Image (cartoon, rainbow, N blue to C red):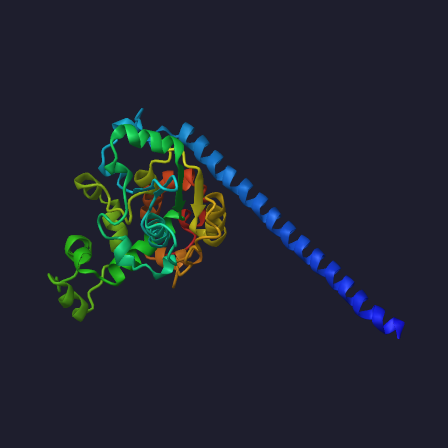
Length: 326
């Protein structure tokens, strides 16, 4: 009888020990992961600093400062005064979801679920406050004291994503402003179309190689700066002039987003929406570049070389040594 009474107590004791050990292991796992992510983050920032010092071209041609920069050069920096945050968004680098987060923060507590915010709302002009709208003296102070972050991506993978988004599925503006021009100069198509609906009906498409030809054409850069979806990342966010506190990578998006929200003390308030569908990956590069001749692949790397170096992406030697036949 006494033995039976002691058994539940023993089981409760053993269960408590097991629970304590499980919590300890879980806590240790998270601490180890946080330490690993902190080391990774410091490595990214140190690499950026070293490459900025070594590569003067990365500092936008010469001894420039933030005071020299026009409003248009700073238009990708979103500011949140309430939380002291500055985010430099880069198209095709999870920017819609980070804009959703910034939009939710702007409108205060209780915070909405960022995934419930329409993409059209966060991309609408004037819906997010920009650093460039501040007087220059305030810009300098905010850049010094606010927490600044950006997210980057393998430059070639980002190009493929931009092509898929803008030329596999035409939008009216991109058809009129870019596709027609590319079609005319590089497409060698006799059925030249002037309206998006005509092009869609005829199955007219700009090939990925046509897109690369357009990027490499000196007249493209000579007429106007690259469109932001394929403009070099360092030219959008100026990481050699702005000292970023956090550099996230799309390739480690989930972990980086969690770490950043912890850093901002927002981990209990906001969950970053991970909603990528059919995401372009580095494993698919060979198929996309198969039709691009070696000479053009090498030129394209030179065009985006600064992004590769600054943000720690491996030089794609397998695409630059002609190991496959076009």
